[in-house]
Length: 287
Image 1 (cartoon, rainbow, N blue to C red):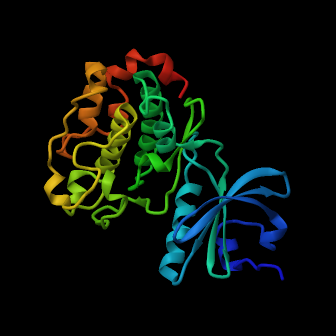
Image 2 (spheres, rainbow, N blue to C red; image 1 turned 180 degrees about the horizontal axis):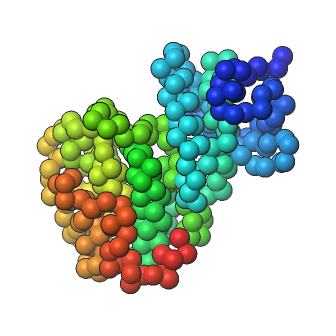
Image 3 (tube, rainbow, N blue to C red; image 1 turned 60 degrees about the horizontal axis):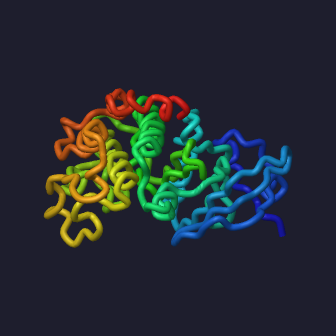
């Protein structure tokens, strides 16, 4: 029996309609989570390799969240943000058709590296590129709300990346508040204290990614959060190995991104103008 596509969704997403199985061919599973899975697949009409993100839903709210992820990604065109091509409702699953990205997560790249941390030039190239993606989102009035090494896919040569997993991303609503969400280990201090995630919170998360790339660990106290309020305003310290060999210009970028005061934290585009990136221009220009 063929799986039938929800025609209302097809019209909303500008799809040409028809049976899902006639348009896509599953190949192999790339990963599985508590609420769904990601598959490698082929788009039959042009043999393009794509990824299918399937999400199980039990109510209209969960269905709407999946649809909103597609709509946000479909509204974005940026070389370092994963593309979305289509969206379907099949039985009790929402399926987002995404660009297939051949690479590994930033978390895996760092932890599997021989030294379990990156050199400054490698970290600078990745951070600069990630900031360009985040700056584009913020220009479009979108907050990702869950930037972390697991949601950044890097090429095996570390010279390219794609920001992915937009299931909790939201448009910034003027005068409106958004509830706390995302991964607590990477959350900004103000978010841990109960404030809604903002553009500044995204920049904090990029800072944590940079800290992780340079040291192979998370900032102090963030391995386990037994009491979020106790560590939310704990000063960030760049001590011990390998921080002893990190340049002052690099340290400055880390500390600016991880400023405890969200009002003093620079925007993504502003942070890209830091002297550290200027010094490593050859690495950053390729991003």
